[in-house]
Every structure is written in structure tokens, then in C-alpha cells.
Image 1 (cartoon, rainbow, N blue to C red):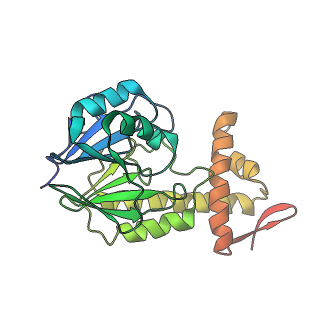
Image 2: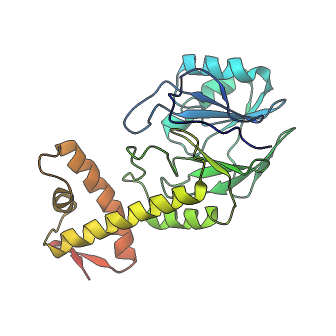
Image 3: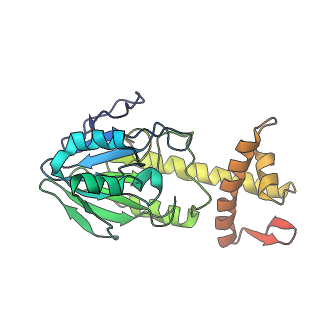
Length: 266
């Protein structure tokens, strides 16, 4: 079965179940923010037996929509990571439906009446991050690994770029047709999406190296050197946090080193 093509970027309406294919429905949670785009995408997979992936933050109104869509056919509940934006509602959903909580490991499968899902460790965004491959449709419920909204940061202080690249290498062997991310619209071209993110990561590495060559020593100095004049302090602080993650990778690659005076090129 193939997913029906989704025309974006139309607004994703909170609380309304959108059928993305015969097997996949998406319901948007009520938590829009600069870090969650429209809000968390909750995915219901299956027909007679349903697994809910990323039920979102604690919000009874959102769960009313999820239960109204899946009802007593909801058998399992799980999440791509333990962040409350993804997993906060698991306990309440289990209490209200009697569903089973799944804490699957890499390589485990979820077998429903109409589907088979394989779980893959996909670290990078945060430790313990997982993605769920719907085998019948070659669709990866990818959590926060990739997004279609370039304004939403992929990197946080708890990210690991070495692990990120390892996850991308794993994905490139899967012959996927689509990504279904935790935030934003379905991504129709997996290969291009990964290539775009890798290019973005490489550009950030290059910006850091240029700033270091000009004498920047701290992440704040690197961030200031990389933004336009008049940038807000919050933007500089967020960028500095991103650069800290990139510097950790560059140090692992032995491109930079941390001295008492600050960061420097090796």
C-alpha cells in the first residue's frame, strides 16, 4: 500500500485525524512552539489493531481526539524518545484505553493484523531516540531526526552529531519512500531530505572553522561572528548551543581542540 500524496504546506489542523494512507493516520497535538512547529504529530498505525506512536504532551483534549479515532482498537503505545513533547501522554492514554506500553529495542518488531513495524535505534537528536519503519509502505516514523520546516532546529544541547551521521547512513540503506516526522509535514523525498541536512551540518562546520581562523575562541564568539549585526541575544545563545555540539564532533574528528584559552584549530 502506498501513502496518498500529501499536498503541503497546508495547515495541519489540531485534533483532526488526517488519513495519510489506509494504514496511517495523524493527529496534531495542541503544543505549537518554535521547537515543535505546528505541534507534535501523533501517529495511529493499523486498522483492526492500532499502535499509537508519540501521543504527545499531557493534554486530555488531544487524547480525546486520539481515543475518538482509535477507540478500543488501540493495543499499543510507544514513542520515538522520552521527551515530554513526544511521550508525556503515554500514562494517561494507557489508563484510558488499557493499551500496552511498548519499550522496544533496536531490531524488535510490532506485528499488527495488517502491518509490520521494525524498530531502529536512530540516535543523534537525543540519546535513546528511535524510529519506526512501517514495512508495508516503506515509511519511517522518524521522530525528530528530520523535519520539513527548516526554521525548527534539529540540534539541541543533548544532540550527538557523530550518532546523527551514523543514523543517516543506516537510513540510506533502507530504500524509504517517505518520512513521517514528529513535527511538520510528511517528507516526500527521503534522499534529498538527508542530503539537505548533511549539507546544512557541513555549512555549520565551515562557519565554525572560519570564525576560529578569525580569532574566535568561545562558542559565544563563534556565534556572534556567524550572525548578522543586530541579532537578538536569544538567537546568539541558541546558535552557541548548536555550535557546542558541532565542536564536539570536530574535536572527535581532530579538526579542533579545546585549550585553556578556548577553542582552536588543530
